[in-house]
Structures are given as structure tokens and as C-alpha cells.
Image (cartoon, rainbow over all chains, first blue to last red; front, side):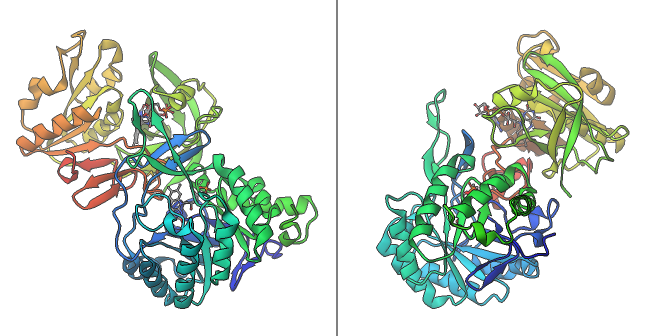
Length: 304
Length: 252
Ligand SMILES: Cc1cc2nc3c(=O)[nH]c(=O)nc-3n(C[C@H](O)[C@H](O)[C@H](O)COP(=O)(O)OP(=O)(O)OC[C@H]3O[C@@H](n4cnc5c(N)ncnc54)[C@H](O)[C@@H]3O)c2cc1C
Ligand SMILES: Cc1cc2nc3c(=O)[nH]c(=O)nc-3n(C[C@H](O)[C@H](O)[C@H](O)COP(=O)(O)O)c2cc1C
Ligand code: FES
């Protein structure tokens, strides 16, 4: 394990032993992966989106494989914030890693309410505000694709939440920097990007869409070039620490995100293909630093 | 406990041009595997396959630490796997899903096409527990009937073929064995067949289990893509299933 702190990074008050986190919706609540990896070896875990009330999510089929990627339309299925606090939090609160809650809602009030409840949980050092889910009718991405709405929701949550506030951005916008700046102005501590890209898949034989909701969110290796571009643009034009997400399949991909300005990274879809990939990425990043004779990961941050 | 490990291909046996059985060697002692559980296969060497592929465990040879998978070629992943040769490595996440609940004194197994895959290992377990069984297999023709010898050793085999080349001509739903009394029915196959058998079981008040082959992204319970609508809400097919009591399923 890495003891030399060469991979240690900080997102506001949250100290990560290494930059490798897991992306919301792809890692459950962490414990499903304990057969494969030691959760304590990760910089952080972002759990599934949590909403004020239980949500059933969208109808099946919710998934379609696409070239080097997949589309999903899960639609924020979760048991609600109270269930999270009572039943799930006790199971994960003593992990020696940062457990971050992904907060979602349909209205501004819902975001605030969920954030205030999570604020009371001692061992949750940060929330990731999901203003970028493409798979729900109301709220979700509607907040994150408009700079005024982003400003409003982030400001409101900022008042209710006093630990590290990460805002997760959508790539489904014309100008991502404008949204990033709105979140920064409203008091966000960090930005994570990208959420999934709105996409679609069709079965030509059956002449039908492959997803129940017709459109869904694209993730996996296919989105990496878009994600890198977004991180690079936002890193250049805001002062906040950035968490890079999108198509990270190995350590090399992770390093690419650091080079374009990310402080930490989240691994999503890759967990489905190799359940121990996160640990392998940590190891691969250590090897990279050694190979290039770099003392600390921050030396290469944003050099592009 | 789930494992993510390499197996070695011992044999790739062609049954028909689009159906094959992969026999795989585990380098260690196999963990306990329940009939009806499945594996998630990493398909290598085919750039168009991104996600793993879920395949049921067809048979388990505990003594030799081997498992068998019965695979039907339907697309690029299953086609790539059909090219595997003796000595090739195959990375699997296993064992996944809940598996069948073994119950009763006399039970009926109904399988259609390649969907019948999980039934062979179920028969072994039933036999060990001295539960009497009949197995009814529906297939296209005699060439598509696999594991016939094993079925006959472990159970009473009944067959329907679409062309009458073996057993009764027609579909499983018309077979006379269905008129006998059973404590439970285990059915795996095409959805219309499972629905028909489920309706029949409902009418006769017989406990009926089916195996759902929903599209999966992770297979380990974290993506929530594979849900089935049950009386208790949306449940993950890869964790709560793939075996469901039909009385719990909304669509059945
Ligand atoms: C729990 C479970 C157990 C399974 N057990 C077996 C088994 O023992 N043997 C076996 O041969 N297959 C089994 N399947 C189905 C198998 O997973 C799919 O056939 C396979 O993933 C298709 O991959 P492909 O790359 O060849 O096809 P693709 O190129 O991905 O798709 C080709 C065509 O197959 C269809 N298809 C893809 N996935 C599925 C699916 N899950 N169900 C039905 N149709 C599908 C697609 O809609 C498409 O039309 C099982 C599925 C599940 C969920
Ligand atoms: C099945 C699935 C479910 C997801 N659920 C959520 C979610 O609940 N909240 C969220 O902010 N992002 C969610 N995402 C988006 C991921 O966290 C991540 O931003 C995206 O998948 C891109 O990263 P990747 O290419 O590494 O997967 C989900 C992604 C997938 C594939
Ligand atoms: S396939 Fe991911 S939860 Fe079942």
C-alpha cells in the first residue's frame, strides 16, 4: 500500500489517500465490492443517488450496450434519504475511506432537504450534488443545464450544508464553463465531471428503441474524449479542485485526467467489467510516478 | 462470497453449429455453487464486446473442480466465445444470483431450447436430496437435444420436438406429463414458454420457479439495470434472481 503520501490529495476539507474514487451508481454502497477489493485502499466512494423519497426508477429495459460503452436509464432508483441514514449509513460509516453521498432531487427544496439530512451524518465528509442526471423527467439535468438554475440550487444547498460540497456537472450543455462558474460563484467547493451523455440506441430488426425511456445516459470508454475536454476547459477557467469522471478504464486514463487538471478521479462503468479495477488503478498510478520519477501527483496536475 | 478468477478451457464441445458446451477447469477448490446461479464472462479479443456476458452454470463437477456452460450463439460475444480452444483462459465472476430453492418430494423441470441450461445441475442436486423428478425438454429437433444421457441417468426424460424427430411432436405445454401431480415446477426457457407454464401452474396451484434472462451490465447488484417488477417493487435479477417464484412476478 502507498505509505509515502505521493498520491494524497485534498478536496477542500476532505483528504483522500489517493485520487481514486468510485462514480455514483456504479459501485452500489461499496460493500458489494468487498469480495474483490479492500475499500480502505480507495480515496473515496460515491454512493448511489439519494433522493428525499423512495424512487422506483424507470421501467425495464434500462441498459443497452453500445460501441465501447453503454446506455443506462436507471432513473435514480433508491430507497430515499431516511432509509439511507438509518439502514445504510451504519454499515459504511466506519470504513477507512471517504464516503460521499450523491444527492438528487426534482425540486430545489428536495435537494436542500436531502443535503441537510446528510449534513447531520458525522462520517460523511462531502456530498456530490447531482444536477446532471439525464434520466428523470423533472429536476436532475434541468438544474445543471441552465446557469441560473445551477446558481440557485447550489446557493440554496450551500446554506444548508457546511461540509465539502461537490457539484456534478452534465456534459449535455453548449458551454460547460458557464455552468461551472455559476456553481463556483454559488459556493461549491469542488466540481465533478462528467455525468453521462444523453444518447439513444435502436434495434433495427424490431424497429424499436432499446431503452424503455427511448433516451438514456452514455458511459464507458466511449465518453472519455468528451470528458477530458470538459475537465480541461473547466480546470483552465475555475479555481476549484476538479474530480474527473468519464470512461476511465485503467491507470493511464486516470493519469490523463490529472494531466488536464483533475485533482481526483472517479471510476464508473469500468467497475462492471473488472470489479478490482479501482485498486489496480491506484497501483498503476504509483507505478507511473515511480517510472517518471515524480515525487507527488500534484506535480503533473494540469500541465496540459 | 463472489470470486473473479481465471478458468482454463478443458473442452469446447459443439452440439449444433450455434450451440456449444464449454467445460472449464478452476485452478482451486470450487466454492459452493447452487443450481440456477450464473457467471459473468469477460469476452476477450472482440473489440465490439464491452460488457461481460451472463451465462448460467449448466453443470458442476465438484470432484474435478470443473463447471460447464451451455452457450447459444446469438451475437458477437457468444460467437467469440464459441472459438475458445482447450487451454485458453477465461475470466469469470461467479457464482452469481440466488439459485433455485430445492423443495418438495416430486418435482417437474421444464426447459426450452438453450434456456434449459441450468436444469442439468439442478437435477444432480435433486437426486442427491432424493427428490423425485421428471424433466420435460422442448426443442426444435433431435439435433438440438443436449445432455440427453445425463438427463436420463438423473431423471425421467420427456421430450417434445417441433418437427417430431424425437419424443412428442409440438410444444411442451401440450405434453401429458403436465397432468400429473408435482410439488413444484422449475421452468427455464423462452419467456412465452415460461409464461405459459406459469399460467398452468397457477391454475393447478403448483409452486413455480422461473429463471429470468434480463439484460445485465454488472451482474453483481450495483448498476440496477436488470430489474424485474415484483410484488415487492423492482428487484435486481442478478441478486434477488435470476430465479423467481412466478407468484412474485408482476408479468407472470
Ligand atoms: C442470468 C442469465 C443467464 C443466462 N444464461 C445463458 C446460458 O446459459 N446460455 C446462453 O447461451 N445464454 C444465456 N443468457 C443469455 C446471454 O447472456 C446472451 O445471449 C448474451 O449476453 C448475448 O451476447 P452476445 O454478445 O452474443 O449478443 P449481442 O451481440 O449482445 O446481442 C445479439 C442479440 O441477442 C440479444 N440478447 C442479448 N442479450 C440477451 C439476453 N440477456 N437475453 C436475451 N437476448 C439477448 C440481443 O437483443 C440481440 O438481439 C443468460 C442471460 C442471463 C441474464
Ligand atoms: C448504471 C449507471 C448508473 C448511474 N447512476 C448515477 C447516479 O445515480 N448519480 C450520478 O450522479 N451519476 C450516475 N451515473 C453516472 C456515473 O456516476 C458517471 O458520471 C458516468 O457513468 C461516467 O463515468 P464512466 O464512464 O466511468 O462510467 C450512473 C452511471 C451508470 C452507468
Ligand atoms: S446487472 Fe447490475 S444490478 Fe443487476
